[in-house]
Structure formats: C-alpha cells, structure tokens
Length: 386
Image (cartoon, rainbow, N blue to C red; front, side, top):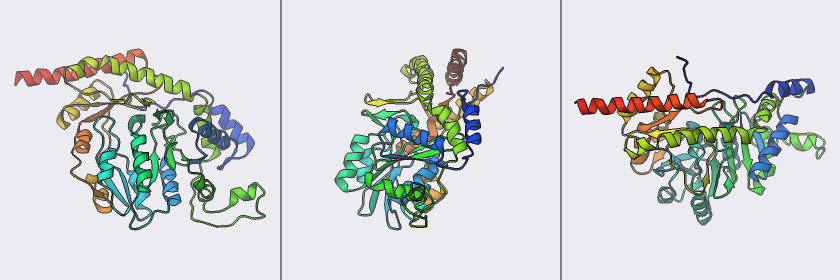
C-alpha cells in the first residue's frame, strides 16, 4: 500500500526554467530581478506599502521587532498556541512575550483575553492566523488603536487569505509571511515582511540590508553606502526568489486546489461531527481561508494519540501541532502566561492535522476519510465492549 504523506511540496513546472534564468543572469544574491517580481506581486495582492523578501518568516518577524524598537521592559501579547518563532523574535529584543488564551473556534488570539492581559508595559499585539483563517483583526486593530499599541501579524500561514475583505498581513503595522516547504507556496525556506505603516518603509529597507543604506546607493541617491542603523542578513537569495516566482504565478490555482481538497474533507466528515466524535474546523463568515491545513479536534489526548497510531498503521501520516509555549521550558523562562489557558491546553492535546497537498487525488482523500471512520469506529467498539 502506498503511503500518503502529510505534506508533499508542489512544483508548477517552471521552477527549473526560472532557476536557469537566474543563473544565466548572474545575479544570485538577494534583491535581484526575481526578488523584485515577487515583491511587486505581494504588494499588488496585499496592498502593502512595501514587501521585503527574507530568508524565512522567522527573519521577517525579527525585522518587525527591530522596526518596533522593542526592548527590555516591553511586553508583547500573543497566543501561546503558536510556533516558537513568534516568541523568539520578541525575546531576542529583550522584551517579554505574554501568552494569552485563544478563541475556541478559530484557535486564534482572543481579543477579550488580550485586553485583560494588558499592563502599562504592553507595546504590541502579535496575533497569528492559524490554518490560514484570520484572527479577529477588526477587534484587535481597534484594541491596538484605542490603547496606542503596535499591531504586527504573524501571517506565516496566511498567504491568499483574508478577513473582513482585507488580506492577512496587510492590517497591522507589518505582517510576516512564510514560504517554507510546508506552506501553500514555497521556495523551500523563505519569507517576506509586508510593511503597511508608511513611517516604517524607509527604515525597513535599511534593516533589510544589514543596517546599511546600500539600496539608496544602488539607486544613485548617495555616493557610497555605510552602516547607519541596526540590521542583519535578512535577504532571500534570487535563486530562491526564482523558485518562489514560479509558485506565485500559480498562486490562485494552488489555493483553489487546496480549497477543493479541504471542502471534500469537510463534507465527508460532517456526519462524524454530528455524532459528536470529532470537531471540524470553524471558519467565520467574514473570513476567506486559504486551506493551509485541515485539522480535527478529537475528544481527548489519548484518543488523538490512538487516532494518529491507527492512521499510521493504514500508511497515512497525520500529525499533532504546537506544544503550547507557556508550558515549554523556554516559555516559562522568558515569558509569562495570563490565566490557566485551559482552552489552549485542551486544543493542543486534542488537535490532529490531516494530509493536504496539491496532487492529492480523490482516491487519496477517500482513503483518508475511510481510515478516519475506521479508526473512530474501532474506538467506539472498544468502549462498548468494555
């Protein structure tokens, strides 16, 4: 039996041609012709003031924290249910991540919990958009505006998705995107920082170029370039950008196909949700998701672990997701939690992600669904036998 992997990176067919074009053009480092094409595509699709390609979404978040001038004594409110990069970017500036509760439907930062967590040291709200489903940006942006806070979006999973008609990553002062191998469009490792605050654009260009005014030099605006601010080596190579361009060209088609697979799962699993044996994803009415992933919530952690084992026995790879940051050794060392975070803890123990990648056939999807029914039926039979 052929194994169904959790993820399989998709190639459009143009990647090799564009890599050859980059090689022939002899601009392999960052900010080359393909980087410019990708950045323009991102600006047009999101409405961002500027887009800077980075080596990763982690790098994009670190850029944003530099631009925010975070430092010791500052606090940043974020969900505990997120990847470590969200918190690392804050801690690297000497600031404190404040871990808050999530909304039980979207699994994103709960605006009410964020409001309750604020202190005189709060400088920023840092929501993520889990599974490409937008956080409540209207509420979070209003909260940031009313309290005079910065808003930065960790939109690593959010390309080609929106909330209330606005592309994810385009609402806050800045937004970070990911093009990691597991993301909808990819270049293996890569990311981008969308800069939406016009006052951040000029400095972002300097931070992006290792703290120098190199970009102004190449535009002929200064006669030499020099070190003028903090920065780092954030750029994506133009080789990676060439691969990414092949993906962005087909971004709509890739997203449409992922949504088709997502919808098939969603329809096929509705009866199991009606029976109370699992919970399917919840997408708010004003959200347009990008089908980044399809997750289920099972009754408890033991059932989730058994489920993963049973599907593995059927040669189907399923995986859990984040260990909540507030419960991790580094989270306890560098951050603080607000409340007991019961929803976060429960979700983390019960969540499982299903295979979802462009190239899955209807037969693949049907096989996964059949294995889910079989795994949950086996559990129900065991309970009845006892």
